[in-house]
Amino acid sequence: MTRHSYLIASCLFLSGSFAASAALSAAELSANPARAAYGSGVTLRMSFEPGETQGQTLRLLRSRTVGPTRTPVGYLPLGPDAATVIALPSSPSGFEQEFVVNRLPGLTGKRIVVAMVAESEGVVRTISNALVMHFLENEVVLEAPDHPAAFGFRVIRGQDGPTLHGVASKGGLAWAVGLPPGEPGASTRNTVLFSDDRGESWEGAEIDPFRTVQLSSVELSDALTGWMGGNTLGRGVVYRTIDAGTTWTSSSFPHPVRALAFAGSSDGYAVGNDGFFDEAPPISRTRDGGVSWDHQQAPSGVDLWAATALTADIALAGGRTLADRAALLRTNDGGTTWSTVALPAPGRRWILGLGHTVAAVPHIFAVGARGAMYRSDDLGATFRMVPSGTGQNLRSVHFLDDTIGWIAGDAGTLLLTTNGGETWIPYTSQLTSPVNDQILLSCVPVSPVRALVAGHQGAILEFGRLDG
Image (cartoon, rainbow, N blue to C red):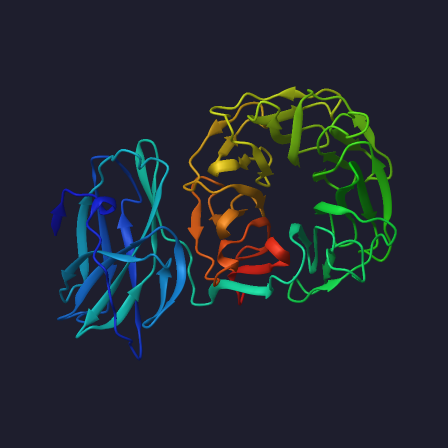
């Protein structure tokens, strides 16, 4: 086995051009160990059937994201920026090579995705799975995401309407909400979409024929009970249903509503910014499922864009201060009092999304501008900054359980974790321009391997294992 003293991340890029292959075989690419301190060796191993690669050339490819990406040889498990790092001759036993992992300036917090192909006579014969290399402060973590052939990105509803700000799903029911229709003669005054087949098809729903409301958030506690929040003319409104959207009741607020967060079917919060007319506090609280609301006192001078409720008593709200710094508020007494949570490096890293794992002591994540990501393991009392691997604005974070979670953001950014947020896997959207550059404002998991994403100009997307 050969030992190389250079890091994969610093190798020279060589453009790889491949001819089409009629039938591709698969090979397993693995790393040992899966965690390694800087300065130590990591062995990459590509396993084949005996003799399968005799006389072939192996190419190690690198990308910023996980695929799939369609190429003349089939689907690569890498993003469209894939390039060759190094080409090596194969042997009958396959490929096994050690690389020394060195610390490089600016690499901490970044991610590199690698995969391998085997080719002969200019034709690719074999494609491996992808490995994601997460460069943490003191070590590198290598992760092989589950990447079946049916894993991909599918447009369910294209960019043909107002931007959608929120999506929620429970069981087979899903709702999406957004900006009001802008075209003259629109049949409704509000953008509300409904699906009863797990997001496979969508139709418009009428919730308020008398007011034009910009809807920013939607929450479901079960298949029957849900809430939608927004604002109109500087004031807020929350709509409530207990019959899967057949009927809706509304409550008015002195402050605009940008985000909703519920802990069960009774206890919830609505947050926004100070009221335009009377500078009302930007947080309201319900204990009866939205039948009535109390407007609560909170630190002044904050615009709030995100909220999450862990229990009936513990909740967080995030946004920015008037000084243009990240703002994070917390209550541990059901909103009677709110306190400011200190954040590392808060400058211009506004909080745009909040979410938590589903566990007795959940991990809480706050995400926001310029790729900001903060994590708390003590119910939100303290937070530390963790690398997101991207500089794009991150706008929503949702967990399905204690391990599986998704983040959506600008420029088609989608991140997936399968280990409770310890590492985040970056995926490429595989959409053509201009959809590829869209803002993905909300992402909600609908199964362990699938998520629904809502975004710019009304797009609704499905991402994950499409046959799951």
